[in-house]
Amino acid sequence: MVAVTSAPPPRPEARVFRIEELLVQARAGRIRVPSFQRGFKWDREDVRKLLDSIWRGYPIGTLLLWSKLGPAGRVLLGDLTFEVSEQSNAWYVVDGQQRIVSLVSTLLLRGPRAEGFDFYFDLVKGEVVHARRGGVPATQLPLDRVVDSEDLLAWADENRADLTPEQVRFAFRVGKVLREYEIPAYVVTVDDETVVREIFERTNSTGKRLEVTDVFNALHTPLDRQPAVSLKDVVERLRVRSLGDIDEDQVLRSLLAIQEKSLSGDLQRQLDGVDIPTAIARVEKAMDRVFGFLAQDASIPHLRLLPYQSPLTVLSAFFDRFSTPSTRARRLLTRWLWRGSATGELRGSGKGMRPALEAVRAATTAERAARGVLSTVSTEMPELEPEERFNLRFARSRLAAIVLVELRPHELRTGELLDTPALLNSNADSFPQIITSKPASLSSGGAAIFFSAANRLLHPDLGAAAFLSIISARTTAPHVLASHGVSAKAADALRGGDQVAFLEERLVKLNHETTRLINRHAEWEHSDRESLAALSDEED
Image (tube, rainbow, N blue to C red; front, side, top):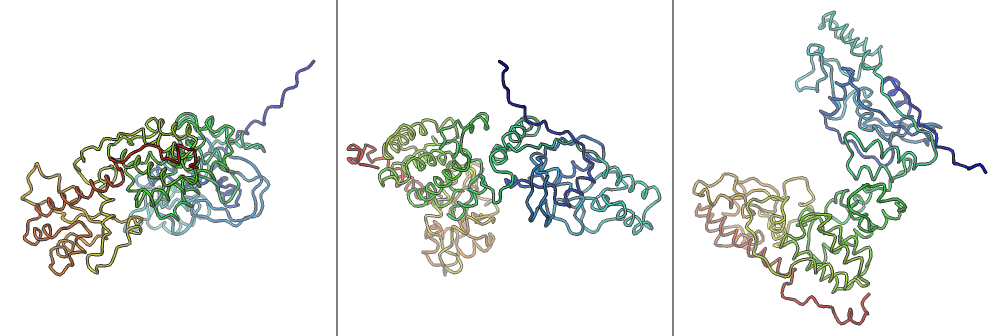
């Protein structure tokens, strides 16, 4: 009997493309970026080095293109948009997007270019340079005029009076080198996406690796579907909660936790057999419930102020498994979040969350799952750690920031209640300093108070002079000052010119409020035992 074996998949076609050919194909709409859109992540220096490497003849890596049907419509490449007809063999860029977008945006786009793509070749220095302020000298060749030889000739004619014959010849040589530079590529022509994904994963195993979230989006988003069903989509949809943006890597950790997969290791193997569109839908629903829990039960006003990010993984798994937990279960989860934040036990990520994840997976009811999660942190109330320096990267500062939100701050000039969600969502500094010059009377040993939350407001930045003037003014209403943790005693100290006493008094107030906040939600003295409903299996 002759064994029947399946035919091997078609081998990728090895090709070499000149840059001028790639740009022609890009203009024709044949080159397309897949819908998962990693997004352009290179900075200006990355782009400059790419162009300089091409000029010097250095290798810049191999492209991976998937040849398949490309529908008619709008194609976006960098800053260029093309309306194109259907292409029977469009090239979808599986690996090489940053390089292709850089080349298209720098060499093909005429006229004003986005910041980061305005490059010239300095005919004096013999190197690629950024655009500089104050005008461009004639000896700097715009790189968007080198691809078309006729355009390059026109540029030389326009500037011939300011160039030496050697510089004109040099410009022509630069154009020829850039146009004719050859980039190796593999073109894959298969119907089975898994073959392309396998090639992509292997090519991403060496060299400068993509972020794990980029790998996920690349491997598991249909390359020709708009809009993409990706981690980025989850981030966008959750934005309506006004709780701030969540990182894509956190969405991926939550997805893995829901699928009961390891949070580390080979991503492709972890997700073998997983229905990705269904998994994306599940993680979105679960995280939407998590956001609701954080805002309504746990009093977390914004993701920026969540003391530690790792609980999001556990909470996602919990709210996926138990979509409508009882009030008791939600209360136990709140205790866990605040106790672990106060003790620092929620610091870290993967390994530290395993016991809590196992508790969620082992339980048959939401309350028992929540009790199991709660049992992974201490029941002993810790001493409040002193805050060395206000920095929202640290849990202690985030706790202090939550206090500033809880005080319901008012606008210092108008007395109106501030829109704190909008303030926290803005790109501006939401917590400006009150005093910007360290008081001379502050001892070296007590300098920490100058950098602490005592010297911060949750308020649009008016400048130190305005802050000090308004807080010191006797016309400023006491309730407005109190909404910023400024007591009458602190205000009097500032009016008397004693900035150190002002900071000390305010620090005492904020530390007191922080302790109260933690205790209110951690409920150290309350019983964590099962409720009667849970004991009788009536819950859930």
